[in-house]
Length: 256
Ligand code: HEC
Ligand code: HEC
Image 1 (spheres, rainbow, N blue to C red):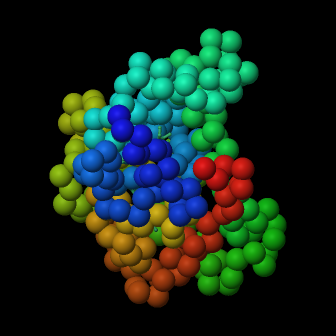
Image 2 (tube, protein in one colour):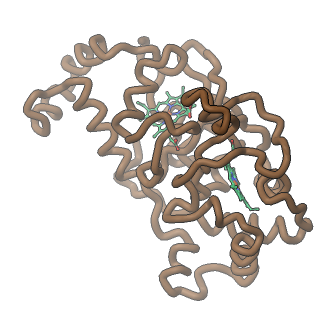
């Protein structure tokens, strides 16, 4: 570990909680093989990671620290290092046993729980403020429901609560086997966690392989591969307009 990489190197909080790159770049410029999802609102996901391999934020947090490509650290070293900083006292205030691997994961997870983005125009609309979104955005929301997007992207995170195959209706031309890597079950091939659509306008490029920077193109891909019905340009634009109403406010307190 060389202190060059922090969580915020890849999850830039005031830019959508991701890194705006096709795949993540970790220690010594090493390239990962998957797109960085946003950390914002990750507390609302039923599992963490594209393939859902972490059941909780605590479990997730242990991943990148020891990942040889991402941060390439080691908890024995990390605990020792942190004990030489102001964190020693801060941890001792909160945890009886001070700085430990478990407590580090716990502290990171607690911090992540504050990284939510309430008060998006769409949330305000749902709470009864009819003027919070435009007429076109309402039309986009209707299309989002009528075209079946909502079958997968639903709940508080407009996603994040089930797995689905990428390429239900048509082969999505992907190399990553998704959940199959974990379960080795044929039926899990190309299955991924349905991502949240909150703050989606700020989290390009899209999909686990970062195949496009255009939200317009992403919606067209979904129409074709997931819904199996091409949409008119006008319909795609209306849905994109609706998706932009899902951008919320990041609490100041979680700014680093
Ligand atoms: C080198 C870039 C990089 C660093 C550093 C990094 N992450 Fe990530 N993060 C990623 C990538 C890439 C994924 C997706 C990996 C996958 O799904 O296989 C991810 C996934 C996540 C997720 C799951 C989100 C979801 O929707 O599934 C959370 C939460 C997260 N990271 C938090 C953290 C925390 C906390 C740290 C610091 C301890 C951290 N990350 C450090 C790149 C990074
Ligand atoms: C059958 C389930 C399903 C349906 C229906 C569906 N999606 Fe998706 N959506 C997914 C999955 C799974 C992914 C992630 C695919 C991947 O990257 O591997 C995704 C990804 C996305 C993304 C990119 C998110 C990101 O962070 O990269 C957008 C945008 C999106 N969907 C919008 C839509 C829209 C708009 C519709 C309706 C036209 C729709 N989806 C219909 C399952 C679905």
